[in-house]
Image 1 (cartoon, rainbow, N blue to C red):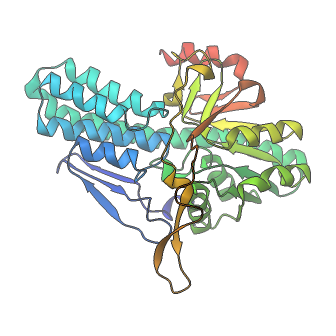
Image 2: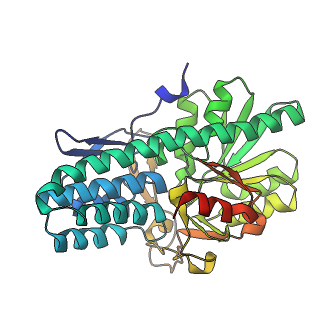
Length: 359
């Protein structure tokens, strides 16, 4: 059975019908529903409220938002306003900036009467590029997994954090891409998925892996370090929302702690991300903006009650103060390597990737 056939599509961009629909990931894993986006404002809100998640998918949705904006008006000023609105929706995810800026630059370079058709073509093209990227990245990640399996000579235990799977992209994912293809190639493995508070994206990773038949175990966020200390984890692979030129990496809050535990236990820690996630204008992690989100994400959780009804419950004093950064920065010194669609690079060699990326 192909692992590529078991998850719902995350985004539809219909160039002919000028229609955009996204999977509403706020409802997963309990319901699978799609939301039609009518304009750039709705695209920005879908990004902001996490209807769509994951840096690559956010970028594709941003590109689709620019196509929707061009349907409203092809005037340069209007497109600039739409671009700024979209980019402000999730400031840490650099794929969003990249996709929106790419669209805006291309559209500004042509006559207004050509922009509407071109915008939809470009958005569909970016979507297809992300799909191809995921497949290329998977090949490089699978090589690492295969080498470790041959070295250890036993089934592998791989830990991941947040959701950097199919739901975060338009194909195989980033952190999970090589896991899917390695499993399909017959390598025995089990994935340990951190639940990833407060939005519990790790539960989505577990859901999609289980749907694909990949052995998976959902664990509490704080269990990862103990599993590593016990020798129960062989490899850590995470995704990224923005990677600075020196390799410092912003990813979902909690990633830094996993990297520290991996380093202390001599466990390889890889970051899987496409070239569009690298921000060469950011010299280090200190240049990466960290999004702070609503405290209600900590105070409230959504799920299914014992009667099978969806509900939200408050788990603390509703007036309690909170601090809720959405991301943290893992220093490059804790990262074994970067798995990209253009190969695997250690932090010291990112300068070669930068030259080859023509960015």
